[in-house]
Amino acid sequence: MQFSTLAIHAGEPGGQAAGSTISPIHMSNTFLVDPEVSFSAENLGPESPFIYSRWGNPVVQVLEQKVAALEGGEAAVAFSSGMAAVTGLLLHNVQQGGRVLVSDVAYAGVREFGNDLLHSLGIEAEPVNMSELDEVEAALQRPASLLFLETPCNPILRLTDIAAVSRLAHRYGARVAVDATFATPLATRPLELGADYVIHSLTKYFGGHGDAMGGIVVGSAAEMGALRQRVGIHLGAVLSPFNAWLINRGLATLPLRMRQHEANALQLARFLQDHPRVEAVVYPGLPSHPQHQLAKKQMACFSGMLTFRVAQPQPLIRRMQQHFQLFHYAVSLGHHKSLIFYIPTDELQQSSFRLPPENLRAYRRFAGEGIFRVSVGLEDADDLCRDLRRVLDPA
Ligand SMILES: Cc1ncc(COP(=O)(O)O)c(C=O)c1O
Image (cartoon, rainbow, N blue to C red):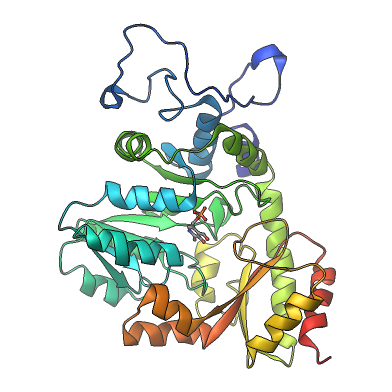
């Protein structure tokens, strides 16, 4: 079955109660069970019946099976947020005194988790520029259990060659996790390129409407079974059935939305590139993106995220807050509404990234002193360009 068919039908049970054609929301915390069912999560397996919603829930399972099918994976475990998925997978793959390699540029919360909580547990989360293979290989000279990377990475849209990094990591006995939130499986399927795990913040493009948080990890059935037991059930950051239902509904239109996000982003990227006030635009779909060849090879859709730079961002931020009619000046991404947010390089470096000098230089090549990160929504692209012109053109 093709992607758009799977997005609608995968994981959906055949017959529904009362002849319903849509999967119902099962809000029940607990389920009627046979007396011989074990009370311990240690004895749970993929074939176990529904017992308690922290262990498994029918509508959450529909979503897990659908996302696994879209990623070409065997199984998935859903979490209450993207961060819960990332931190759960990292904890699952480390031991006291262990070491993981984390993309030097990733969603700030991930870097903060590595610098803070993992560090305090005696686990080294070493920042590595995953886009430079020799830096990855140099870092692999000491044992590491896991490589964590994002492509395109938040916020600078730098890409990592998943197939090349996976080959390298496996040679050194390390596993590879790819956060592909910005790409979605319509663009890139990391498992098919050799990665061991794919992670998504479902809060973004999967849900697509900015009204439900969630996260998911996809991988082999054996690994996902262990992840559910050790992390899902015991840390307890499970997805609510209501959010699973909303995100499942969002998924039905994911392929259509992603094509429109891409078309709109391309039009806005070209508009910004031609605007005299804009110094630089970064979008994987533009030939000017430093890794456009890799983007063409690895992304079947360039998605809806772009960044741009101007010489004096502060007055522009004020104009945005006063004069935007459509864009929302807000964090997050992947929604039907267009969002924009300014990310200053120094502030992020001091608070979250703490990049060594060479990595900071590499960051600045994409982001300079700071970037406006734009999540291009599904509004009419001409209207969005007019909204941007309103704030960019001199008053
Ligand atoms: C790439 C990426 N991964 C993970 C997350 C965390 O997701 P959530 O906000 O759902 O916890 C984000 C949030 O912005 C993100 O951009």
